[in-house]
Length: 311
Image 1 (cartoon, helix red, strand yellow):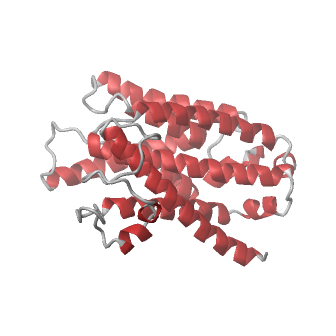
Image 2 (image 1 turned 90 degrees about the horizontal axis):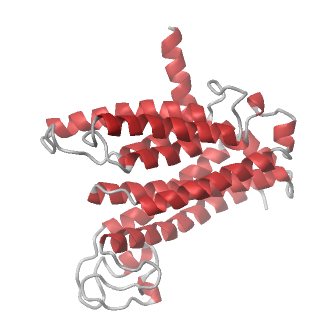
Image 3 (image 1 turned 120 degrees about the horizontal axis):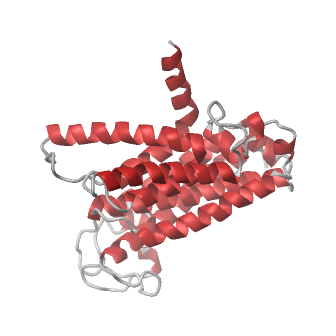
């Protein structure tokens, strides 16, 4: 299989996988809102209750074939359904694009089977999981102003085990031991592009834990000082998860970017009279967007910030 064919195949595969995951995320969101059993309840039309058959459950295509209507009651299917499936698919493609821009990813794949390949693939699929969780939390928070804590706690556990696994596998990786990565950082940290800021003494899982503590501590302090008026009680948990997956330096840039985006978003809502100064906004989506921007363009953001400082 040629490299070009493999890359194109992965883009198509990950878009399809993302659409399937997006469909499941929507089920989780809607059933959590209705307090229904997520796994055991059969898929059904929320309007007439008819149990859906397999060809009514194909992501994106079913919406097109059914012309956006339930086959039984003809009730219009909200465009939110295919929109979330498409967005998830595109986000999965963006994650692979990020990996594909790193020469280390291609180097790692040439060592198959090896610890390098294991490190590369594990990092990729961990980030697909991270993106899914961020999207789930964001959409639910935006719709209900509530954070799905139970899924975040599961994500924190998976994130910790995953990052610890990367750290342990990285010890046996040729890329890690030969110091191809600056400061001997892990594959994940190189992809994030934070090598300009990370203290070489705090690498691996310690970097993740410090990132979690910093991100959680700052947001929790704001919640405590404002007595919950500035942010909700679930926002520190979101920040802790993001700090864990971004690491120490990533969490610092993430916090700064979140406050900037949050401020701009609030001003726009006030100018459009969508919100008043006393009304809350869903901060979870802002945290998630900031995390994705740091992951995808962290190196460029950090470099631009440093250039501004040295001018």
